[in-house]
Image (spheres, rainbow, N blue to C red):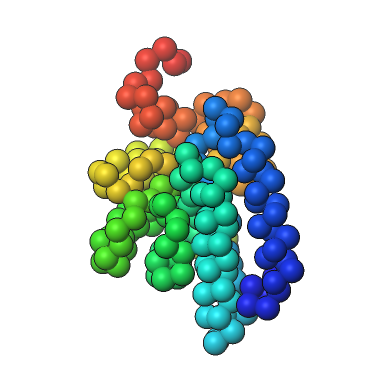
Length: 219
């Protein structure tokens, strides 16, 4: 998408957002609206240089247009937008003042999110929309040039550390959802899933303790 010039796309998407907000604004499971995922970072795969800057500014300005539209339809739920890079926050701060909070996908570096928030002088709270142990893009390669997957013990400890970093930023970090709570045993499942094939890994217990305070009643 060319966010600088494609006004037809943006008009269509505003209508699309409005349709879904109307559909779900009164649903009891609706917590908030999240406009876009990892696009400020991801635009680097499509553009570079001055054009990349222009697209990032145009994209976050469009996110603000969507946020305004959502607020007009549904004043009862906050609006956020997710990225995987705190470097996106200056764009949101500059171009999307109608967002109520920010959202971040962060794995091995999750404890750095608080530092970036404080050093950037931000005022809006944030939630962590994805987290978990260090991903294959964050770990060193082994002797064969393959990402060196953490052990199950290290992964379990990473969930505990991540949760402590989120809850430690009181009043600013408003919570977290963890990726990836599934049963698959594909590449992502082996790396991240807590219950692959329905089997509880150490990470499952670490996360249950983080969210509930106890693993009582579990085998």
